[in-house]
Image (cartoon, rainbow, N blue to C red; front, top):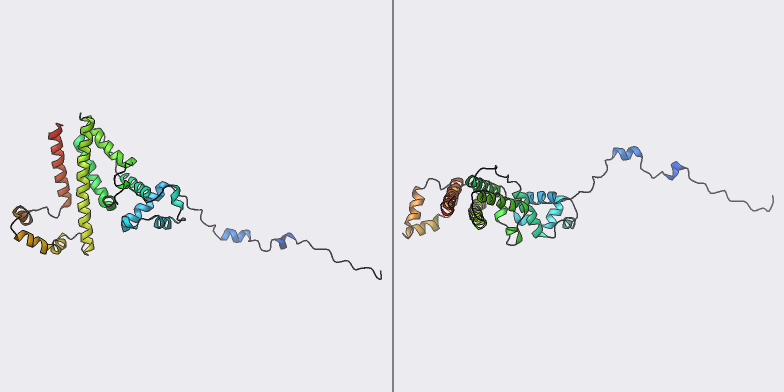
Length: 258
């Protein structure tokens, strides 16, 4: 009709296919693997990764930031389980000591203490950072697996008739020997490695020859001079360790009448 205003065409509602034109196809989604689920942290996983870092690179390489990187998580994620470096070190110590198996029941006090000492040395040589911990809680703090080690020894000594004080004194004596002797062995290994001759005792002696030669020539150390010239087990740390250990066990047997 003349003069009548022309109506605008109605707005068209997009068809479902057009509305979803930007949608990713089901088949494209199926062909593209979904992102891996977010890493689930556990204390065991944190300890495992931290121990791996320390074994490979030394205890100094273990930091909360490095740990987060290796775990593939945000730097603060591990703080849900450990409040800081001290907690982390305790967790690592406990995981390492968890490798020790319980002694056979009824083995006797001497066999029990000797076996635990020998296996602890082997443990430390696998994880040398155990005797290089920074001074602090982790170096002495009780952890479940560390206390279990003492428990096994004390139980065997108690069964031999010793008092509570005597069992702790005996276990501490053997433990101190193991700690000191293995720490010296680890330090020697590190020195050899630093000189580019890991495991080469002759190279180590050569590097120390000027000092040792001067000391021996003073004539003040005849027993040490005799040792250098005649000893047959200078390069056998296991023999040295076990011989010293047997001396301690002999002493405990005599002193405590067991």
